[in-house]
Image (cartoon, rainbow, N blue to C red):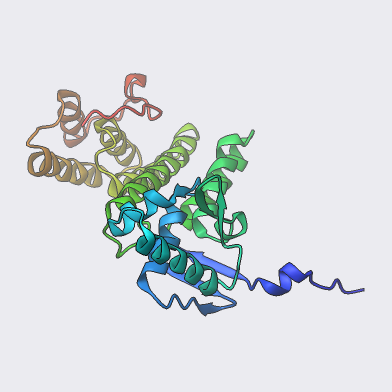
Length: 272
């Protein structure tokens, strides 16, 4: 016998929220109708702080208001508009003075899927499962969080999510490095450094070494030249002596020796 949907399932249409690389909120397959920009803003603000925020924090951060009858009414109307746009009267919940999105709303986002995959990768007990989960997370990260938004609270969340994405790329690079697959290691290192060139000079060194070990000495030297330019233009600095020595070694066409563990791929401390 076919299961009949519950009353809550009937009352709450399917929701799909995209925040990584594009901004899209679909309710039953159709774009959400916010009726006011403040409603959309409140929705994404609470999405960025899933633990919740007080009414006072919301009023001050989003609209620069102190709590008073007019501000409180604006807040009440905006909450109602969010619930209406999502066609879910329980979309925003209040608990001991903190307002947060319902769990089912949070679970409908690509951001939730991204962090679920990261957690699965972190807790996986075998290499294959780790690789599969981290690659799933990487595939879900299609670009910066909430592109087009320029407020401080978005920028902070955006940097946190990008850092998690870069970490996933480095984890996959480490797996391929342990397998001595230099080409694949270089591919993921390149993606990580493109997303965040500041993560550490040791990663730039490792990329150069992997490219050379994979037979792409030209690519290794080209990356070194770009890195030198980056250091000069962005930081007013020059490469470390070890980086210069590695570049010269590759230029001379010398045999590629094993990379010393002191520059191990697993190191997380920035050196650039």
